[in-house]
Length: 223
Image (cartoon, rainbow, N blue to C red; front, top):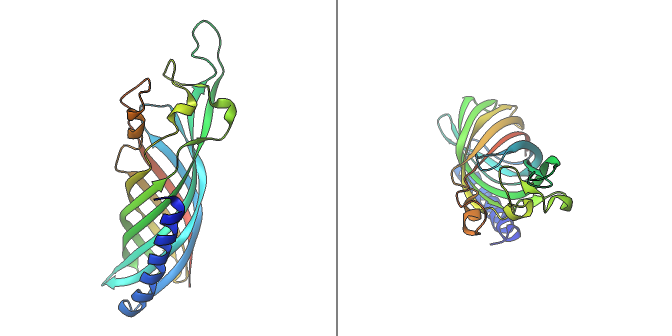
């Protein structure tokens, strides 16, 4: 399923769920628009990486569930970046230019979260699973395509773009603000090896391992 198709289907489900929630969550139910910044990295020993920044935005629904708990579900789009070290040659028999090569990663996430209200409508802890569908890692500059990834002799920067596309994540964080406007800080951690797809390509290493980590700072406006 393409990112476009997934987005359309999930958005339709979100809007339908919001209408049904109005009947089930009489106390409080709001449809919101969220936007923010992402700080993305790969937790891996396979590459030398550096955190990159990006942007995110999407739709969310928050509804009363029981006692001090709310339910949150939604759809978010993000454009993330991560830097991976490489060089113009493998350094054997001559000099080399070492650089941090920037890769971009587009993704769509479907989330279903629980929210514990410390102060109802003003301060809450949020936690739960997400399903992440992503594109390939894409080099921001074509000039680095034939650069050698740091730690390898022949592995080119363009050969590590085809990472695994589907991965489950766990997210937790804190949301604070007003009934109609809230600021959030969330942390996401990937549960599966997002580099596993590279192990099937016959590259220099057959034991690529890595999980995604993302810090998200966002704002949500509820209607």
